[in-house]
Image (tube, rainbow, N blue to C red; front, side):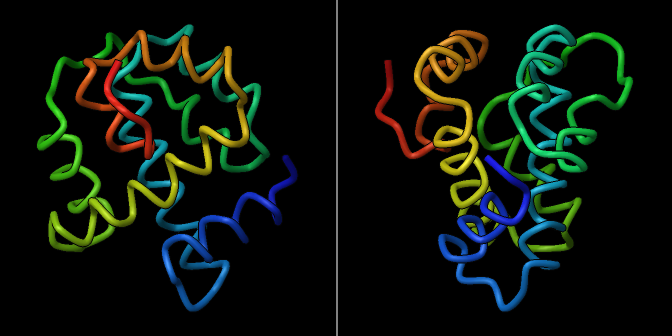
Length: 127
């Protein structure tokens, strides 16, 4: 998926005013996601996403952190200066687009790296 197509989908799903806003939210969500999954998983996912967004997944942060869905939302909210409820909307817009962009097998592998409750954030049912 090309960058413009990715951002168009995020903008539509998140009901943002501009592609710049969609890009800012996408960057924040992917950055937090990269801190939750292992470096190899982050790199594999980055290889499937358009540049420069994929760079958010390639930032060196050491070992993956173990945090729950609520902490994920809190961190995204902090990154974009929003309330956690708003962040939930933002996360859904971005991660459902990620699921579309990477396809079934890659998406399934990513979901295996995360607790089952995270599937909600992607617009998918729990495993």
